[in-house]
Length: 86
Image 1 (cartoon, rainbow, N blue to C red):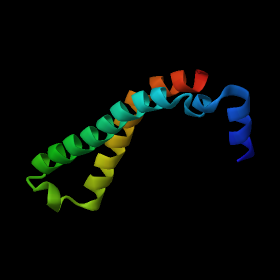
Image 2: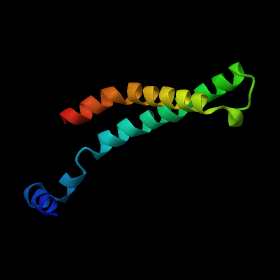
Image 3: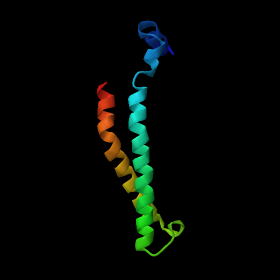
Image 4: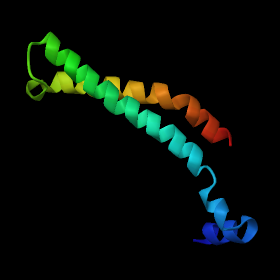
């Protein structure tokens, strides 16, 4: 709370939201990449194994999650660097 009071006193109330827009710009595409990569990988693995997505095993789901995470970071990493340097 002390830091909040100090920021408001020194820079005004709007300073509490500094960096919010770049965070939103970073998060929206990164989550789209994460869920998109996950779902596309699940579809591909299900097709390769001649199964429904609901019937995929743990290894396939972990693989899909890993691809989703990789996609997420690939999309958001440049924005994360920009956000950090602001």
